[in-house]
Length: 318
Image (cartoon, rainbow, N blue to C red; front, side, top):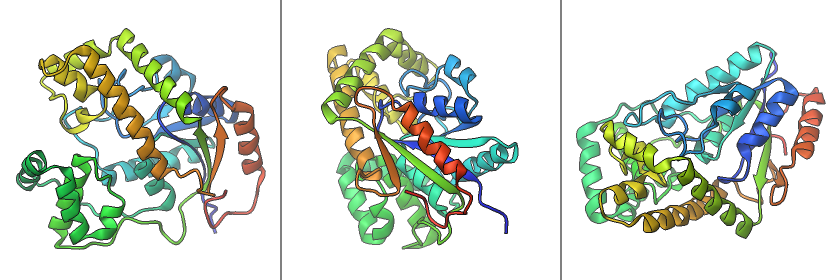
């Protein structure tokens, strides 16, 4: 029986230091990094997504970055085969695949072997739902999803209109309640999960500081440039934190100070949502505290122990 590939996953909330740790591990263990951040897949969305810089991408090979235009949403069903192929390619070359990102749905879908229905977009139905979301609010649409398919609703962020609409689109196309994308009985990889966390006040301070640094690096110009190319700030992939609020500033709806404040507040909320995917009590995740320093030595020790183990694992190891 062929042993399942070994995979390291570096996960946790935004701004906690995942990219830096993944690069350190890649350099130490001859690894390559697979992106699991749903916004870093888009070309031109560099500063606002904290995408690895050119220097960081030179320091370690990165995959699934800059693979879509900002008006071409990448669904989970499209992401998974790409990610599985990258794991296979990297492991096949004798290197260590390292998954890195804070999009919980991407991470668990890959590690647990979710099967996601392949449903093509339905622009007419999607537009109808988008208009309803604007008039009725996302809670109303999520409630409809919950009534039709409670299991799918349970894994869909009720604040994310785009994902709710996509979930309803799948249910509509498949004619009602569908098998939820859930873990398989045999996960496809032997996986070690390293979770980075930090004390909440320190993490919020880090987020605020990082957003100020993004503004200094030219985030407003990046947003303005995307708008000039015809991309709609606040819609689709550009509905994410920062781009949406700066779009409101450019439209004269907010002051710049208000846009920055709302961006950091929304990022704090994002952290709380990320912790619902990556629960501190989840025994599958080996948590390391990054409040004061990046725990590179501890992470390397865990990876060394994991790679020394010879027996295949039937479940995701603690």
